[in-house]
Image (tube, rainbow, N blue to C red; front, top):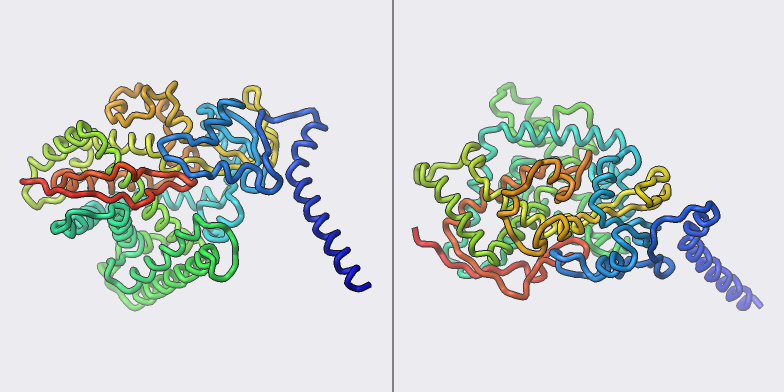
Length: 483
């Protein structure tokens, strides 16, 4: 009798669980039908999973992928779906995407899946909303501005680039993504924490940070031993390391009366910011490491990959940097005037961002019912503006699938660019460090194109799933340029 009761309770429990899943999946649409309002056409797919697996199917990052191509051809550029456990409006429409970005905090707000919050932390600028995000972003913009004015900032980047390329002198092949990450990590830990790569704390942060990055793109299961669980623990260890560095700085500051001993990194400036709590300062450091490490290194890989496919662009780039170097002393470092002369370099970087789509889409949530043209975006629904759709739209960019840096010489206005080119997001959530990332890439290219020629393997290309990476790390076959 007891056994029968157990199975009956289990059966009722399973049935109830399935019923809740089905209701959670279809209830949003049922309620909208009762109210007489319906969002754009589309499909919700399977209960619980929705269409998430199809949406995340790997595809070359310089293409829309099968899911978006199919849905756009069937439903139009704006359609409904069920992604990441939520009813979602997906937008491949340039004007709607721009509208979403410009109405951040008014009609829409950042809304990443809960597991992302678990890794990044509740104080992260990447997941914060409202006044908290505004306060954190203001600090970030101020820090970037102060950093750019420091005379050693540019020379530190260049010294790191020269060091990386010098280590290639006896090599005929390198795995470029590894080299790019080494470069960006060395730059960012120096900028943010004032650490050199050989210091034990830098080594520990790198080890934990690699674990953290693997968990960020893993299945969000908090089970001991899973990449996600290890990433949460790695973030905790990074936080402890950063807190220890902060405490050491404060002790040194209290015991020293010599102002010349003060460092000039992000952390030193951050310690004097009273508007941030201790946890916010630690999260700010982690956000800076994340943006300066992964995004910039991927952009470097994109540039090198596309240049290998375009000999004419590479030759034009090489001439630009030779002209800059020609008027300088042999070992003289670059200055800001030299950087301003790198006009074609900026075209190459912008075109790599457009073709490669380092950031494919972002997560938003509608704060109220939003009517845009004939579309209804229901309150509480998730919204996914897909930036790559505008980047690869042939009606916005002639020969959109071709890598053509010269197209940026013909852009009529900055406002026109903003609407159809959003590589780092837009509005109030545009990445505050994006220009620093471009600077790092430009400085690295200055020395790379004058010292090496390279070729890539035909079958290694940037793949989005959804985060972009090169499956084999982008092997480069090197040939030293004669001087």
